[in-house]
Length: 257
Image (cartoon, rainbow, N blue to C red; front, side, top):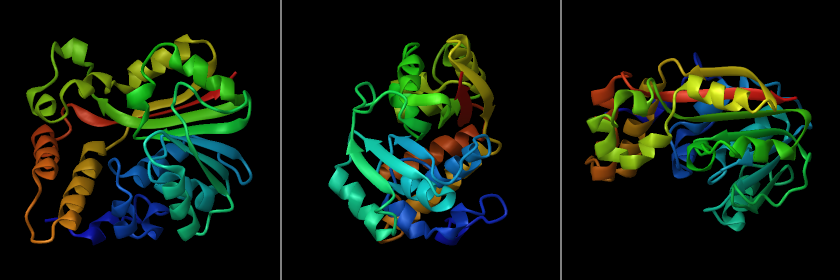
């Protein structure tokens, strides 16, 4: 069984390795968010003082990371997590003066147009961003030349090309896998709008292995007696069966024209 110390990987994710794995797992709402964000940030130009919208920020780990590691002023927007709950996380992490928690639905964002330098979304875009009209809506909130980057569960081949969701994936996540697209699908969808220049659209190398490592560590952390809950076991079994044949993460970064 994976130990929590296995989530500290300075060789691959030096910034993320500064964070307590137990703290991260207490905020868990999706697989390895800081690893994904640290990898995605290599394709973005993040600078101190930038105003960043963290869209689908969950319980706040990625917002803390953006404020601490890049000196950003962050707006953490989520529909499911109460702003008061997220604000307590930010205060506890010492970034309460740089991160503002907002309850917002992704299709009705309560912000002025052109008010952000960057929009980032980690482990969330698949829930609201797959429609053809969503990126044109989202880039309204970016300043000219602003950046948008997202990391999302992905398939190595489109489900439609396969003819069906692979059985070991469908038995765990069901229809949701229809929103897990290839990196090239995302590149084409974003570039075709003519509103952004896509800087990078790639599958994360070893993404399924990171996901499996996180799932095993989470299962251990949440278990008081060494057993694995059914939900955790299902995810571990799905990834073990897949071995990267179909599952990964897509990391996409673009700049508004």
